[in-house]
Image 1 (tube, one colour):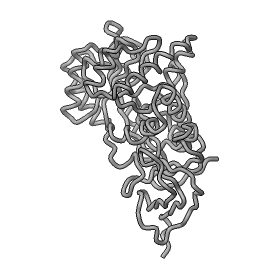
Image 2 (cartoon, rainbow, N blue to C red):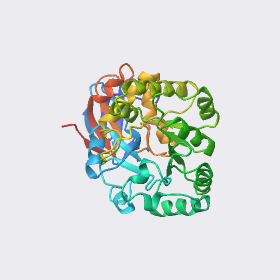
Image 3 (spheres, rainbow, N blue to C red):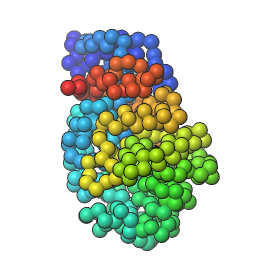
Image 4 (cartoon, rainbow, N blue to C red):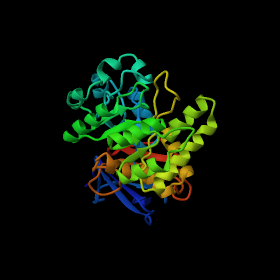
Length: 358
């Protein structure tokens, strides 16, 4: 008996998080990875490489076209770090056959700094008093936020002060939510460590992280989402491309210290941001930059599959295994030999629905 929603991918080499398998068969059974090829439509993959669908651990949503771009490049999960109002975010959740998203919703900001000048954000996002942290967190959860984002600046530069951020972290943890901190300067990074946030996104330009901050990040069990694509673009936009070298150096140091490094791009289509980072294609560039910073090709692939699934508690994805979501990326070439092979997209499956590149 034929099963129209069942596909058997034959002669495919599977990335298992550590290495490539010998050629084998992977079954897509509806929206999940199955085990029984009976009645399946067969696709001969000719020895191509099958990866878990990629996860971009730092994006900003635009509209439906954002998801379409991500899907086309094999990014099957996008972790949004600020989208508001809640109605706009809700309209992009759960769209069939497109990139699946999680989001922080509205981020917490201070009364000053660049984010306080974004139209429509300050009214809902400004956090001034530690006593307001609990309300902020419960409001975000009621709106559907999957984790909490806070935008930090160096002390005295308009971001939330340490007592406010500490209270925010405590409130989020009491509700089972992870806290991700934007910290793009050395002072903001140190503040994130002092407040005990779970993840720090961005790394500073121009000056590498101090050995003390690297050691603290590792010892405290923090996670890094360095967004090298954005840092590279920002350095170029400022006319100081050489400043990007410090970001690469910091990521290498964090990785050597044992800090989990996740692949996130800060892809966006918003006017006024430091650099315009393209959705989808930028994650492949991010993998290349992670390798340049010192990660192996295997470690770079894990940074966009296994590790973000683990640290954002997405237990149904990040690997090619029976019962998990059929979020898959088929590529020509061997990305373990040359990470640039992830760009050679042959097919993508989002929740079992196939997309082929134009």
